[in-house]
Length: 151
Image (cartoon, rainbow, N blue to C red; front, side):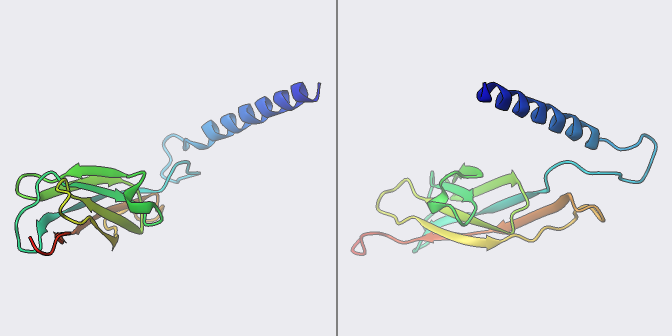
């Protein structure tokens, strides 16, 4: 009996929150004043660069991942890309991250993976309400080390 009461209570709470959420997601028609806001703070980012070896040779087909710094080696990436034959890559995504971790994993097992943390600076965001942080971009070039120093 207690389980049925709890289930009923949970469903009523869920329905009430859904109604409140729908009611808060719109403004008065024809009004310039924002009454309430409902959503997630976001922005757009682009990270691009080139992956080469220490002696300048392009590294094709390396996987480049973007994640939050707290994640281990790019697990649960926000964006993934592969380098072109020229070693160039471009990643883009949505989010308002102050820092991002960029991880480069080469296809060639003789090369060491590398990662770096980059500070993101957003520009051209919404003035006043702060929901859209704007756009941020960064250029990250990787120079991968050879695991076998003799080669």
